[in-house]
Length: 338
Ligand SMILES: [Zn+2]
Ligand SMILES: [Zn+2]
Image 1 (tube, rainbow, N blue to C red):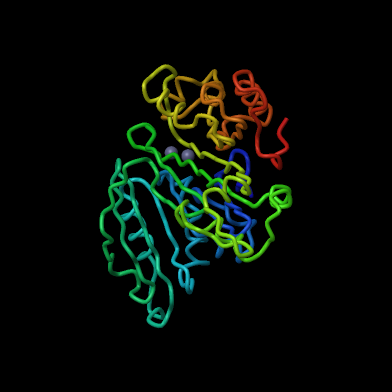
Image 2 (tube, rainbow, N blue to C red):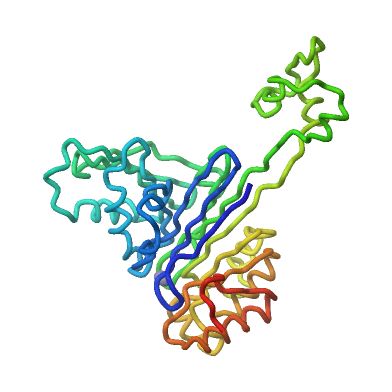
């Protein structure tokens, strides 16, 4: 049970984040942003296995690789492709779907579910390949009462708009559900005979349900308390293209939201010495990224989205600036910087 992640793209180039939520029984694959060339080292089967694509925003460096994603998935059978993003996503995706010549599509499978978030409101529409993506079939609007925009059995995805110059960039936080497994030791010491009844422990039945074990009835809640071992789910956050001032309300809200997160994957566009440039372009500096990770008490900080204005030595210096605030701040392991 884990959240596996891989940063796509190179330092100083466009980046994306590929996440696999591994529950033991199932693997859910989530892609965050889709910059130029980010998918080029993935096998077609890996691209076709992505369940959800989340956009932070639609600056070119986050969407330039979408044609590759679309080409591999436009007529995916059986499982719809789900796309998420900030306000404006529906219009931008519809335009991209339609910006090809479609004349051999009538018998093609392919369903795309696109959703955009605005505050607690989610708007969505279905697009079909066989219709050449001509119609946006509106889905009912959904009001969510928390920041969770997607709730699956194995995980949730929360979203929060962050200020990025004059627009917003969506941050995302994946929380894996806790897992409950039968402890072999507890089962052995209980003296209860293993059997198909064990499966009922993980069924969504009420605690007062009676379960028969070897002819004797037991309360389900008691069996759960006695036999199940709980493993806490992991969490991972993706924050890119944003600017927050330390000690502002927005800063402390985000630090609270990220509190205790296992892994924070965060932009690191500018060095501390370029703070005025960072502010002007709506980005963070390395020291602020480290400070935010520190205040949020995350367990791991991974830096991406480095400006190409710096040399490799400059990037190594930025890692040091982040690490001065959050010891252990690192680049993706395969980047070999410094
Ligand atoms: Zn960017
Ligand atoms: Zn941007």
